[in-house]
Image (cartoon, rainbow, N blue to C red; front, top):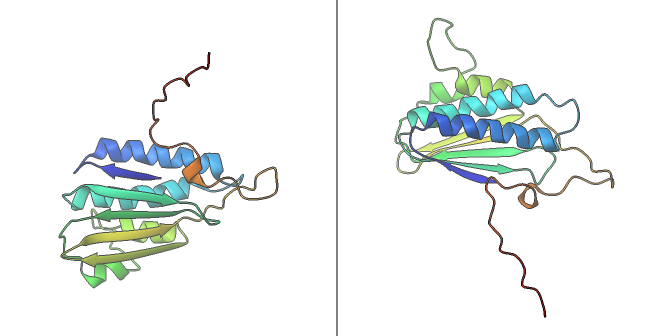
Length: 159
């Protein structure tokens, strides 16, 4: 599943957070901690929307046991190594916790920044896919509900 968020559109980011949460809820094993997954995703997509100054591309891939979300923007924000590798934040700071929170509430977070190509963050959520009643994993999300519906015209009838 893929989305493009308009530049600095916090309403679109909130709607996307709800849509991703609903998708996880439909496909996750019973008892999965969706709250922590939603917080991790929300922190990273909010960071992109607030700081990139460009559109934000989001991709959710659940072709394996755990979902992987990739967030990409073309922002030129020069991220320093301290911000991307920190393991603590001064409680008096009003911001700067998003990446730390995402790392604490997920399986893995990888971040790459290039001044000429923007920032890409890969987030592996700590949520496992439910097993279908047939014994295998549920269908791949690309065959599940999409974030939009394609109108279909009725089939022609033979006479």
